[in-house]
Image (cartoon, rainbow, N blue to C red):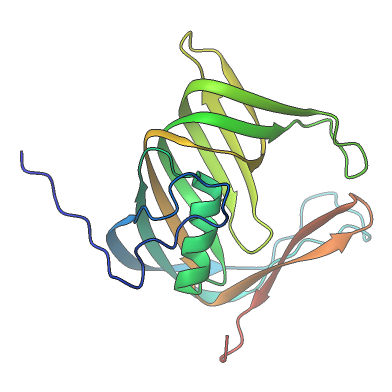
Amino acid sequence: MQEKPSVTTDRLAGCWASGPEHTARNEPVELVFIIRMFVLCSEFSPRGASDSFTMSSAAGGSSLQVHVVRLGPGQELLGSLQAFVEERRLRAPFIITCVGSVTKATLRLANATATNTNEVIQLSGRFEIVSLVGTLNRDAHVHICLSDAEGKTVGGHVLGDLEVFTTAEVVVGEAVGLHFNRDMDERTGFPELVVQPRKSDS
């Protein structure tokens, strides 16, 4: 079967690594297709939530745009996705799904806090991406689950160093009518997601 050619432009090629530490700065991504759908985002209040607990949501219809991105060996996955989001000016981007493999990962575990970052692990080897989810605005919040050669899994909050081994096929969605931002939450000590209707000029 003949392989489909990559769809790139001179403007897009070579912009997907977000720093000198990324090993394949000049590698282009492959944009396979874009789909438009319609989704409804509505106000949501969790059952039993206290008055002090605020859910961030935005009511109204929102068009969903889907981008499919393929990254190649040696590219840093998170930095490449953030650069793609910036280049495409996506305002409410999130990861729908991803399959692929990596040779490195730096993860923060669940019992780490904003003031205690000792619970950080650095992985090196060959790992299959079992799951990759999260939001991709400027301060990305992404979680990953990886499996090793024996099928054992490990997961956590992605801090970086997700170096692609063979491939990473990522489906990125954007809620076109919304804007993702982050504000510091005193209860958690972390900048947390704020969802707002998008202004016409953004």
